[in-house]
Length: 447
Image (cartoon, rainbow, N blue to C red):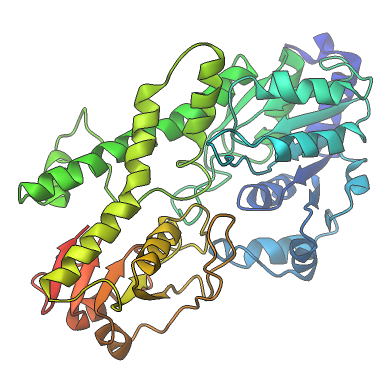
């Protein structure tokens, strides 16, 4: 589509985007929104960040970071710029030419999609929508959300999508803690509800990322994001299912995976663990599962993968009990020292972390549980678990020896694994971190 064939409002917005005179607003300044806001700012736009959490807004204004894996550069750069503003007042989004929604999409109690954050943020935008605006949804969701949920809400403003305002979906692809890829270097999928929306969204993202990949529809972009995460979920479930099977046969699954990975084609290595965590892999597949039922389909494979991955914390607790029994101890009254509570290494993110269920199960069985995590000094509040009284203990020879069992959950690079190998009386290893030190003086149990 050439600029001359665009609707008049789209032509005007395209000119502002190409000249970098547009204002880009980002709703939700978490792990997705904050790096994106910075990328848009670095692309030359005036950037307005909105979040309901006033603490985040005030920290950004002061140049302080609340996402430690990002370092201090982003917050410092933004706070010193005249092209940046952080706010918790939605009226300050009224002048934004582009508004990008980066809000949570959790699951309800029965694994149903919780669309409340998308709906409320879209309603907030609709009340302030003006002609010539582009709205982009980045939150992971089921196919049809942008067209079937967001569009009707926005059109309550009296404006028409594709003529007065424009709407697209561009899935976030953030991986907190990963240094090999970031917001700018990761290819960006863009699917609009019409050709003008795709053109405008592609143009705004082209200023912020190295590669934009337009797709034909928003539904393709929505489905692609789900496929990416379902692919990981089912492959992790496969190795998680093999783990106890091979253990019963006396075979080390880590060595099996390493051996299989020598094949240069047709195999990609996935590794077992104590359970899935984070804002994507444990949640997103169930968005498609829920939507599939509307069309009379039952996603058995996806649901089975979810069941297997969800069972891993209980397997870890079971193996910890077996390890204690091998040294003549019962779970009740034993001191269990958990290493790492974040859902993945080198971040402070505890969303959906398997550590929460593991610790809760251990406590229910009578264990005295403590933990060490260099990135999480206190156990943050969680919706489904109350572990806020726990604080990280120092990792020392004394704290390791004082534990009846050391349980490795998260493999942070900052942790002294050799110290654990040297002083752990019983080490339950879910991440294969003890492999370089085998044999260790104490009892080593894989879980």
